[in-house]
Image (cartoon, rainbow, N blue to C red; front, side, top):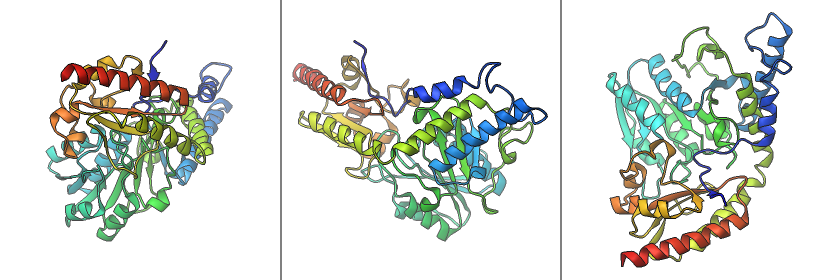
Length: 382
């Protein structure tokens, strides 16, 4: 029997409907042409498919299709947002959450090495970045603030609309990494008040290798291109668009929009049942905000058991200790350390994330397996 997949925060399987739509854009008898080839019918059809997908992604976040810039994923979107804004505005100050994904923290550190000023904003004990903490970090020359909507390890939801108000009052831009949020909660860029927002298809049952950056259409929001060679995507990102990937993201976005009224509630019930089933274990604690959290995330510390041994022993589950982008390291999660966990606690913590194909039966099996394994490890350690 295959392990139960409970690592949806790392990536999601491509939905069959998405794969079918993508396959129709690959071969000679399909929509295979270069979307920039406007001199023949094949190119027009490919361009139309890409623009339809652009509209589908825009609709999911309440944006105008002209505000969507295709990228290779949230990592590129984050890099384009941070580097692009600072380059366009000139050197200045950048404030980012200290528990952002590495695709925000690493570009921020790179910008600091280029002569920009950088402030890392500490979270509270629940992993939230508060508006007050953002306000305290701002300076007269602050160009950009970057705070994610849902933390990828904890699942904590940040009060982005309130943070946006702080940024507006100060006159700086706000970038939000929303890779973990699509399909899990309503995302409306106007209601949130954001200037730039990063997305990734593979977190929402679309293909890997494609994402998008929402760039608010305003004279105040200027982004310098980081990839040059043709001036595609309103001059912000050159390169031949992969029709099949854009189409896949579009279909995935449309499906996510259709499920917003039911899917998050369903996932939250399964999440709560899983937590209920393991919360009685000795020394167990839930990390992150108790109520303002993703419908699909659980980050749990399992007492003082050895984290690596715990992960290896849970053979019936496909889960992780944290972000997939840092899973090669054995050091404690910087996210968990930032919210006050000791190294031992952080190493004994697991991220469990549910998704569209998680069943109630799988949750019950997971509960039983976790209880059995943790019970044995705890007994062995005592």
